[in-house]
Length: 117
Image (tube, rainbow, N blue to C red):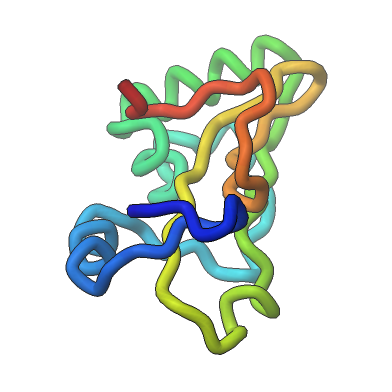
């Protein structure tokens, strides 16, 4: 993957196939995921790594009075533009009264990304 003009990470068809092999589809009409259902939801299970870890993370958020987690993904208008294939990672962010799974921004600010070495 190579950044293109500092705006997007464009990928080759080969890299795209590799990324899609270990991925999950998130619909555009995805509602926030209740923290007490993290272990049952395929999106949070995928994001966290397995059902038990997802359920434990949901319980952690529930204890912090965070009842649900919204998901922010790349806008459909951006995806539908005639452009090269691109990839975006999602990351878990924020514990200041909410938690998010975010893939709509291109930078982490002070947040962390799962799986980055």
